[in-house]
View: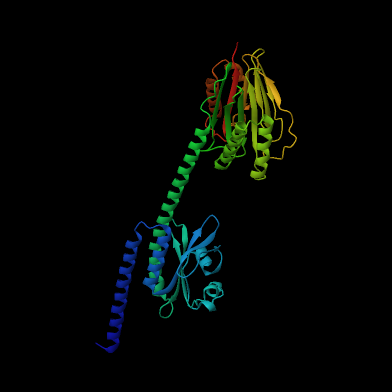
Length: 430
């Protein structure tokens, strides 16, 4: 055998040993990455594995945020976390093209950003940048390897790196999906707890008031909602009535609704008048709520001796007064601005509704009036008035259930678009 043949055979055996050794390393990495790591730990394992297999001095993983179209440097050996647009630099081009980029001399490449080197004092000679693509072809991130131990990254390194990157991408994708699922479950659990707290804080039934029957019900559009109602019996026998609607629905408005109810209950405990409770709560909301947020609210006191309700309706309407004697429905609009809209230093005198035997006062949020069917038609005031007129002599808990059932039937397959709250008070016939 000639010397040249011997050298060729030795080179081939060397490449075979290299392929075998590299394959064993990748298989070992694959097995290791199948362990149940969290994302931070997994990123560290990916970087360490890539450095060892490709004999690189440093490694970096940029996770891709598809919501902001940014790359997030979550973990890197010797560097601090950084977030930047996914169109920037070599990493950005790799993310855009999803192709490997091998730069043998970084400072000779105009795409290279030397600012990281300036911050850290590190000198980047060569760089291998690879896309990390998940099993559903989604971009997971970008892997960068810096400064091969001897020389620069070659074609064989590129092939090895692509094989390694494929395994790392799947592992990272799995961990990220698992983390997202766990976060979603955690949020769902927290929302469920918030709903339980909100619903448990609402009165189960109206306190007994001689000569009157009443009930209230809240049905949020989401897990939690911005509507609220309350019944509080005062020591002198009067009944405090509250029905409100914070703008929007969900956790934010639910917090506003809870705040309003709590502040008003504090006012009642301190013996404040109806006007004082309304004004102070309103002015506090002006300070607390964002400029585009407010709460519409009916705040009233039922006097079972004089058989009247004195109230303020801050942006809350329509209010329905069914007169049993004539069978007519009187409608009232708001008496002042929504709570939290502007300071109320000179509040108008509370309005008054007198209740005759059999009369019904219905406080209903716009989630009922504006409930739409599949054709876009709203439930409207007329249907509400007809139901109250037809069913007014029933117990008020039954009246609410009938009303809500009719609303559901009217809506058909249409989804409830807003929170629904109904509060009804009836003076019993003598």
